[in-house]
Image 1: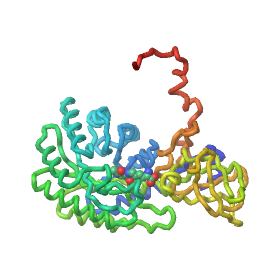
Image 2: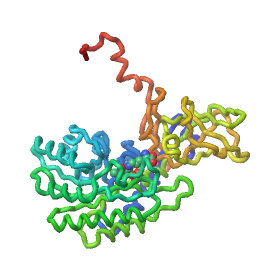
Image 3: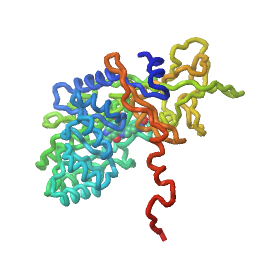
Image 4: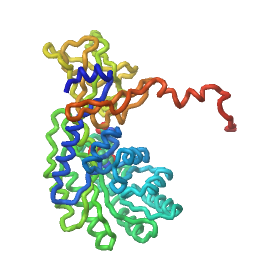
Length: 410
Ligand code: LLP
């Protein structure tokens, strides 16, 4: 891929996505479930650009959404409503109502209070709510604590005994139709053992529920498939799929898998240009035009993204690659070996197709980056760079004190 050409054409900072790579990740995962009924519900939070979602939808993917905003994105991008799932520990009434109005596949409930809220809203709308319950199997996924979700102390899901009680309640409710069972123990998992253990525990629960005449149809194993950022071993998809299939042996359940990172991370590159080199007594700094607002993973998780100086080689020397924001967390790499670079040189931060743009912000009143897709050797813009007018739109009309009616707080 000619990154220099893309940077010249679309400017920097820029996210570039290899759609062919993303499509082949999808096919590889889908094929690993061969012989089993399965639905790959792409976790939109990893990369929710409409064109990315539409590409997966064209391959048959569903969507795992965690807000009504994501449900809207999935629908607009062409994901059929019967392949859309809505998860998350704190859904708003309006979001639950939206999901019921759109008649998506099911709402994944994460607590007893939420299950009852879904029932109440379904009642007021005169509808039936298809639901699943997220089970927290109390298993250590052995990943970064911020993205580990299956431990007893995590806020996600309910324990097995509570889940059983909720399913029985749902079965007896006129408004609830329990059709799925769900777990997700964490993200960027590299070890299959905890997933297999979780699958076994949740499958045992599914068996006991089916014995109670609860008509489950979907076994949702969440996402979490790890990728290689640096030296992580490649995730063994066939072992993963066969462990899951084994867990539900004898049960007539469709497997739902909700990958985000696996489908998109390796297909994304973040391009940023060198502004200055700066040397202090202690360090060499390469200051670039991208910042932590564009890609926050290094600051938030101390995550590693390989940095490449495009078209440069030799004379490598360690440096910190940093952005212009006044925070010491504003870095893309620490002590990274880079050749000498000059103003205007292009750097690529690799494996940034997941949780890159979607976690970006306008911190420091910076415009969010543009996004470009490359497919079959052709590139196209899939999100315009924000303008300063975009940044101000929600405020400027309210700037004048007399531009709106007043109300008194006390
Ligand atoms: N399903 C559920 C219920 C989830 O909570 C998540 C991710 C996924 C699926 C997709 O997980 P994946 O396949 O992408 O691992 N911002 C972090 C990752 C947070 C993941 C949260 N949940 C990062 O940049 O590493």
